[in-house]
Length: 278
Image 1 (cartoon, rainbow, N blue to C red):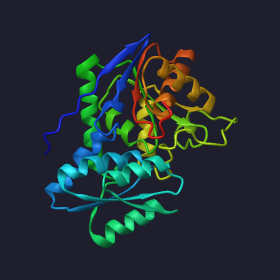
Image 2 (cartoon, rainbow, N blue to C red; image 1 turned 30 degrees about the vertical axis):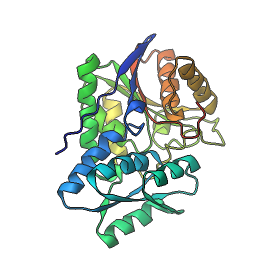
Image 3 (cartoon, rainbow, N blue to C red; image 1 turned 120 degrees about the vertical axis):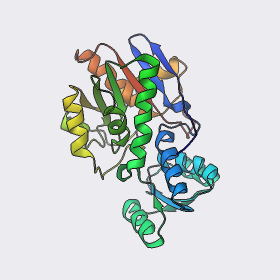
Image 4 (cartoon, helix red, strand yellow; image 1 turned 180 degrees about the vertical axis):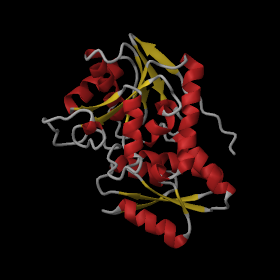
């Protein structure tokens, strides 16, 4: 369906491996899925597409859509980072700011008969992440564990279901943790969100994600901002400049090690810092 091949490096520091998805062309793991989505949409004759996003998926989509000659409209919340909105416009996407990005993008897709690129409801997105699992095993074999920063969990589900005998962990912030709270209840909830790319409220795969994690003997962690900041500094000290979402996953891996749930693991790093806070 498509002839685009992504191949990001895995590095090892101390007892952890890091999958450098932040080195994808758009800076995000979302490249894995949108290439499949765009290829499918092109094959079906679509010239336009729509997405509701916190920013990263839309940026990846806008980046790659030019190669497929598909015009993109992105619906974002007013809380979306201004730097990501600016990047989207630079990439040629039409940006609509609204309090109801999900419902309005859905109506847009239905009323105008354009392709809806929302990943959590599109089976084509899962196919891209299945390819990521294959790439990981080719690089280091099957990891003992893998730790994902999670929003709707589509990335985790698509990748994790192809990694049998690997413990699967998810990480979310205490500010917004509809999935990690199933495994890790916290009373000390932060009043602001450092991981603004991870804010999905609609999680259609929730039951399947939870079942997958439990069957793998993995788990989930709700991480406070102070731990994210510490992990971010550690990454920076090791010359790894990525997003707060990547730092979140690292903090979760440290916690899993501290609790003796894992000895080693593969941490998924994804996202650029468009605010220049590296």
